[in-house]
Amino acid sequence: MVFYFSGTGNSQFVAKEISEHIQDEIVSINRLLKKNEAGEFRSETPLVFVTPTYAWRIPKIVEKWLSKAKFHGNKNAYFTLTCGDSVGDAAFHAKKLCEENGLIFRGLAPVIMPENYLALFSTPEKDECQKIVEKAKPLAEVLARLIEKGEDFPAQSISIKDKVLSGIINDIYYPLIVKDKGFYANDKCISCGECEEVCPINNIKIVSEKPKWHGDCTHCMACIARCPTEAIEYKKASKGRRRHYIMED
Ligand SMILES: Cc1cc2nc3c(=O)[nH]c(=O)nc-3n(C[C@H](O)[C@H](O)[C@H](O)COP(=O)(O)O)c2cc1C
Ligand code: SF4
Ligand code: SF4
Image 1 (cartoon, protein in one colour):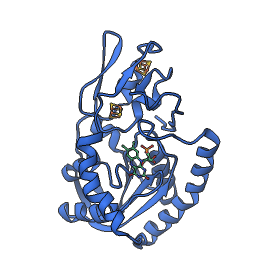
Image 2 (cartoon, helix red, strand yellow):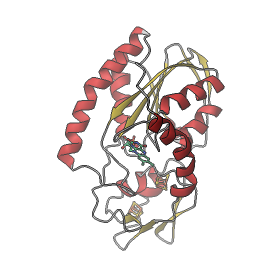
Image 3 (cartoon, rainbow, N blue to C red):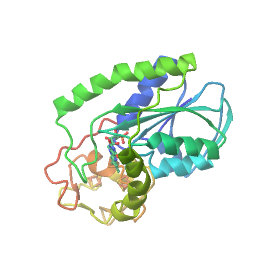
Image 4 (cartoon, helix red, strand yellow):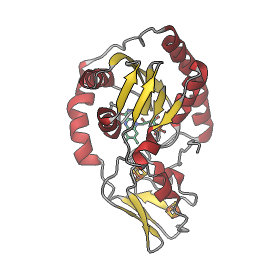
């Protein structure tokens, strides 16, 4: 059973590639979070979790969901983290999460996909994004074959820097950076409600024809990247930056 969480579609894309290769069911964690459901699952096949990397780790929102969800049957858990650059020592924390939740950790593999964090960084141009996505496809197939054969994902070599990034920096990052105060919609807003719809954690409500953010954001970038008129900005940082969004319904 392949589970994915995705803000802008990269992890959904990789999850779909893997699920097609191993011909297994695919489950959207976004949908479960939107309904405020943890869920109970029975799977005869391994559990495959595909998520973006947030501050060199699985997103906290997914860690929280995983600790509440119930899994019956096959307990083998594989993790694939899409990232713009590096996952640090995300594997250590994913393994710990498995131990706490009665799952058997079978490895964590990074897959480079287009950077989507337009609140902080530039995103690649469209052509560049396409090249990155094309390169990710064969890697998704390699990972799918390992899952099929019941082999572990190969362990990555980890430096002290990786440990620091996924440890203390991740701890500091959430309270310091992950806030929605910087988001606003300008006059280009047509009150379509798309931002409210795509927010996986229902943090946006349209009030007086404009989106209002309610202080429970996970910085997934879905709202800002999906707005059809590019009316949403994050402080001054997002101005002029390309919106990367490949999520399918
Ligand atoms: C909040 C946030 C934090 C991120 N942190 C990292 C990171 O630590 N390392 C990295 O390589 N990419 C990082 N990225 C980039 C994303 O992990 C990457 O673009 C991912 O493929 C997005 O997946 P999605 O489209 O499924 O949401 C971050 C992006 C966001 C929005
Ligand atoms: S998606 Fe954009 S246009 Fe639609 S309501 Fe939100 S801000 Fe306005
Ligand atoms: S408010 Fe926007 S960035 Fe924050 S969680 Fe919702 S969709 Fe993602």
